Length: 226
Image (tube, rainbow, N blue to C red; front, side, top):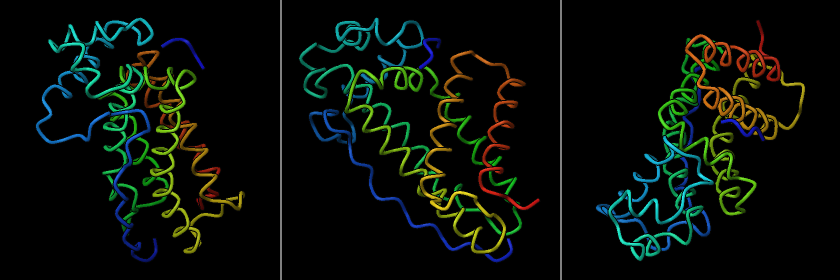
C-alpha cells in the first residue's frame, strides 16, 4: 500500500440492513447524545488533518477532545477501534444513499456509473483525512480490515443488483459470470484509486481524470452496450 498519503423502470432496491459495528469498536452501544464519544471522534479527525494516524496516541486524542483518558476507554478498546467506529460512520453515507445505486428510467448506464463514482469522490473529499488513515491502517488491525470488507461488500451488493437488472434488460454483458464478485473487485479498485487521488491532494482536473479512468474500467468490465 502506498505510504503517501433502460428500457423499463428498475425494481426498487431493498433497504440495506442495519450496519453491524465492527468487533472491537465501541465498547458501549452508541446513544444519541453521546457527547463524549462524538468529541473524541471529532478530535481524532481534526488531528488527522495535521499528523499521521501512526503518530497519534490516545493521550493526543483525549487532550484534543478535553475528555479524560478513562472516558476514551469507556467507548473504545484502542485508537484502532475509534478509527474503525469513525470509518463505519462514514461508510453509512455510502450505504444510506441507496437510491443513488438505482438507475432511473432515462439515465444511461454510462451516466449511472459516472454519478455513482462522482458520489464516491464527494464522500472521499469530505472525509479524506479519516479515510486515508483507515485505509493505511488496514494491515495493522484485523477488526478494522473486517469492518472495511463488510462495508465494501454492502455497497457492492447494491450496485451488483443494478448490474444484474441491466444484464437482464440486455444493456450490459459482463464477461465475468459472477457479477457480485466482479462488482466487489471493481469497488475495491475504486477505493484504492480514490485513496491515491486524495493522498496526492489532486486538483479538480486530476480527480476528474481519475473518475474518467474508473468509469471506462467499470463500463468495460460490465460489457456496457455503446
